[in-house]
Image 1 (cartoon, helix red, strand yellow):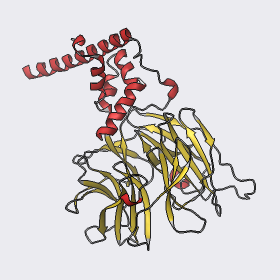
Image 2 (cartoon, one colour; image 1 turned 90 degrees about the vertical axis):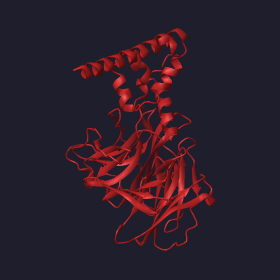
Image 3 (spheres, helix red, strand yellow; image 1 turned 90 degrees about the horizontal axis):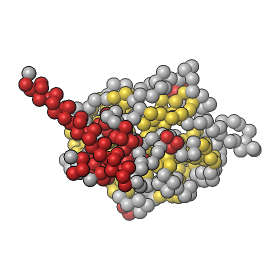
Image 4 (cartoon, helix red, strand yellow; image 1 turned 180 degrees about the vertical axis):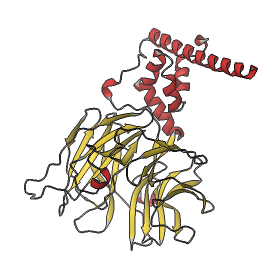
Amino acid sequence: MSDLIPPHLIANIFSRLPVKSLLRFRCVSKPLRALIDSPHFINSHLHKSLVSNSNRTIITTSIDCTSICYTDFDFDNPFATFVNHPFTHCGAHFIASCNGLILLLTAKNVDTCVLETISQPDPPNLSLVLVNPATRKHKLLPVSPVEYPVYYSETKCEFVSYGFGYDSVRDDYKVVRIAQFPDMVKNEVKVFSLKKNGWRRVLDFPYRVSTSEHGVFLDSAVHWLVCKRFGSEAAVIASFNLGTEKYGLLPQPRYSDMSDNMATLGVLGGKLCLNCNYNMRYIDIWVMEKYGVKKSWSKILSVVQNDDLPFVQLTAVAYSNTGKKVLLQQDASQLLWYELEQKVISKKFHFPDFWKAYVSLESLVKLDYEDSTEFPWSKRKTKKRIMTAVLDSFLVVRRKRWSTNKSGLLR
């Protein structure tokens, strides 16, 4: 029967399955594990998930940073699953997510609490760790100390900001670290390469990060809200391209009210967005429909403070699968669905010890390039033999499941 289905069609079918199913299929046979672990299949599965907007999850973090959970994007029946990482004893601070990998900031030893040191500039007792919650793999990143200027008398930073994303030019995942010094415009920037497993210093950041928020990844670049000059309150959007390692500036929308506007940067539906808070009176959420074009900024919703919906901050998390609703985070209390057409709140969801929510993706992306072995597609006989064994294994599983169900019905 395996000769009736072309090998490439078998791989295509498997690449559309959820990650949980694929991880179970890895235990069926060695040929099936070789297929699922191959870089070609992992990239194909990731590409289909990104294009079809499937395998999405919501990452939620607790107030005390001691727990990180993820839940399916179907919020009709939300069920939180704890992220398995070895740093729950001292806590872990969520920084960013990209293609199924999440970047955490955690304590080096059990005597240090991440919640107590996260607000300190350049805390020496914290480390970075990459985690794939779907495969339950993690990687502790090597430490790279901050290089202070020779004429700088103090040995501390104003704060440290991170960014994490994918370099499509070099097929590499990278972490960006900005160490901002007081009373200085240029700040130290280092980039960690997952493929090279090391840090490297690049050109200094020529702007001042205006908030302590971490960078937002989109279109091969990490973005921050920054000030062009020291002492300036006018914020602009700066980008750092992971492929070219060049800085750039992006235009902001034409606000109707510039007073008391506290903005935070995010990504919504694969587009850059701004959450603008006007002194807790009302919230505007803008989306840049066409990257880099000022006129493409569009205000998708505006919510006024009221008795039914009191808030300090509202933040856009993600669109629904239909695109007709936006998932909003209300302060550090709950998540809610906002109907874009009716302009009303339809559902609210509360998670225990809730702090922040982020949209993520389930994937098979590996954390160690050395363990990646190319699947032998070049040899035709080898390809056919492996794919035949894959299909045979799949059919065996299906027959056993059918036999079990049949036996149960007969009883």
